[in-house]
Image (tube, rainbow, N blue to C red; front, top):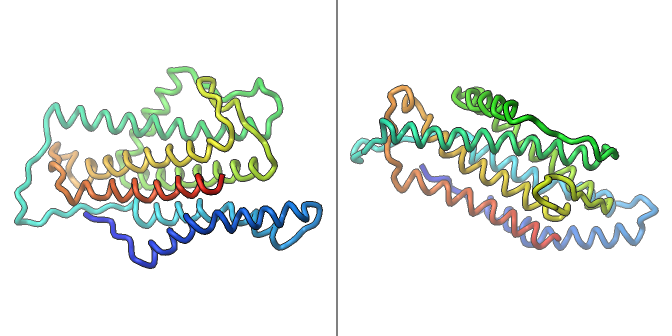
Length: 250
């Protein structure tokens, strides 16, 4: 299965990635020039922060969510099964579930840091609760319908975080207490947001492949050919462009 980008789609993406940040900066300069008055440039600058997140969501839903895997009959297929399949399945499912939980918690932490002035408010779960939620997410990922719901929920989570980041940038708010291990400034959270989503997209694709059709019920998964590896590079390429956009914008 190869994910194809049409010339029109690629042109729009390149336009937004390489030109749009400079347009946003000009709108910002005009907005700052009349900061005490409402102008069309102020509105355009506020609105422009939603453009890239919406592009990411639309592209993810259309290209990186509903996967289909079809092997031509003439291709010789080798299979993964037994203990090796159990190991691969467990690793991918647990990593994906844990990453999803961490990404959702990141949203809550940003919200508390931005809108709750009391620093004592922290999103924390005991280890047993983290394990419980990871298990619940893992179970939901097994079923096709709930797997799609989780993917859409994650994209909504990404969009909300993007709004929080844009709000903080406009109001010159720094968030430095997101994670006790790290000391992120809010400019860096654009990258953290995208890298989280990128990692989830790759693991989601791998899990979609493993759980496709009757693979798991038959406990036999075909060893992926070139056509099944190519979409990972498409995912990496798209999100690399988004990272470039934020590099130009900052």
